[in-house]
Length: 278
Image (cartoon, rainbow, N blue to C red; front, side, top):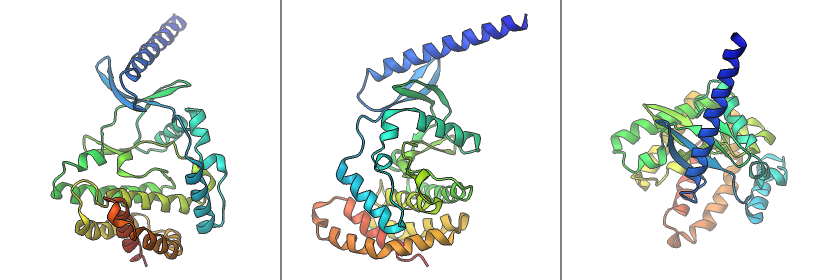
């Protein structure tokens, strides 16, 4: 009788997955977005489609040159062009599963198909929440996230897209999402982690209610909280090595500041803050 119960269970699981897949496909017909939240049998999920296009060639070549300049180690063109992510859902789904097994808070993978995968809903992204947060809230939450990034790195992990648009909050807990980037597999760990740190800081500067004065006060605090959790001299060395180039690029960008709402000012603030790293 046990084999009958096992068979019934497998049939039930398959039926549930088929029902979930049908609901996800229906949700994708409602909007052109690559990631959508939908409900199924009283639970919330997120369905995510494949990237339609890899990075543009100019962006790929610039990133490849930059990585070679800072590390002496070139990245394969197919990696920077996201060719793997653009041809299969397996990379991101498997990375999410591996991170979950390592104890990292990430959404559970509920279903994987050749065209999309489905994740359990794990809250609203911080970038959206920040738009409505009061100073009291973001001055409390953002340093906590900086410390958590440091703890994540201290455990030997890297994100590849550590911006606050790729961190969610649900019931007071943060979750990491969006693991399309695979360049960290081809770089020294400290380099991938440095990229995470820079992306995290840049995504906060001038975001939501955080103005320029607040950014210049907040980002050094976030750096302090990060390094308190993950004091890696190699990351500091990489930042110092990159500073001369970053300052040159910031100087050129500054000439076009009047035509940029936030992007160039963010770069200028970030470079000034990174220059304080000792």
